[in-house]
Image 1 (cartoon, rainbow, N blue to C red):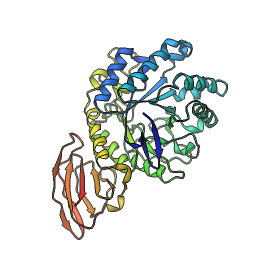
Image 2: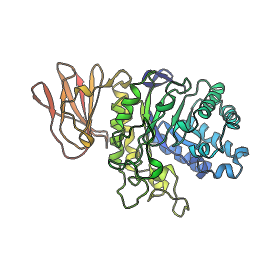
Image 3: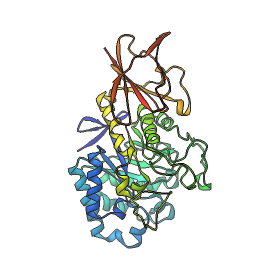
Image 4: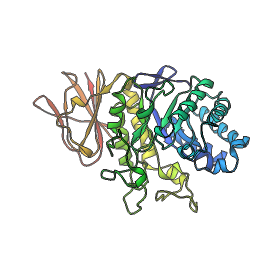
Length: 412
């Protein structure tokens, strides 16, 4: 299991790798070894191949002296080893960003912590390092540079990325750094019109809030030099309240999660990270630290609609040899905005066009000749032939209800 980077994409042992991640921030702080293996097995069966988890997330670990606790790190290593057997990568975040902002992790101890991690997990091929943790890179750029460079010294083949604050991307601060192998952005949990829900949420100079249009972060990152892969590492979680803090608001659903996934991937992202509110915090009824209006227990939420549906995106992209394709917004005629946006991606002998609201899709013929057309259902992976209406050199696929769909064109 060796991940490498080439252009916009990731490769595993030389073959295209589609990052399908699950968010498990509090995995190590909340679950036992047996529960952890149960969780990893569930995600592997649902075809997730990456799990994003934090070593120290809430602060309780360090407060209780776990930095010196061999048993705690043995549990983490056991999880990494078990995941490796299941073909799953562990994207390990050494500490949440609050540890850096508060000074618990600082210039005086960051190298020793990075040294410890680099040595402790040196033997595991399935580790990816994720620095940051819901924090802007501008908070402590020299610290994160030192952290990454120390990790690279021990494990030069392990990929490193940075999980940033909401509605920002790692490329804002670190795209030119040699240690950053691929970019990650957090499109966040706000809906259109919820730009600044809290005072701390106010944007900084040079930042652009694209709201729900997460594909625009992909476009922004891929326009930079050097070119590096990018993915949405934290979109709206399934089962979390829109805006996070006002529990009278609606909850994000599986359909919303699919929209974020297909929009970003068809814009050129190297994969996608799914998340569920109950799973990312491993909530059980009676927990004193329940957050963001969580309504389910984590075991129940493992079977959420969106979690079961993510594999259909992965299967679709691997089936069309996505690493030899590219975003093709130019093929979309009369494209709309917000929920009427059509995302398009194409290769030499295929084209994919996604619309989230079931609305009409209008495409230019990418092949200039004969083709087959199919409708692909992101909710169940089923495909059926469709016939477009051809008008003025356009292929028009009329509205089909209100469900999202992918139009798949195959060159004949």
